[in-house]
Length: 51
Image (cartoon, rainbow, N blue to C red; front, side, top):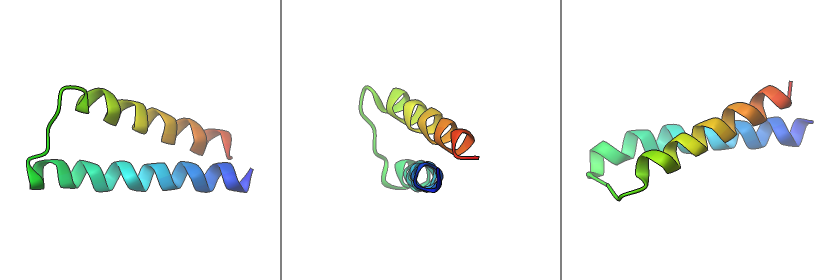
């Protein structure tokens, strides 16, 4: 269970970093919103499952 929680927090950290970098670097592509949403959902599920 600890590995699952750590993976969830790692995904959350990646999501937060990308959320900050996207507007800063003006990154965009057609599926960006979908990728960010999936990353956020996966992080949330792994954190909840890890508790």
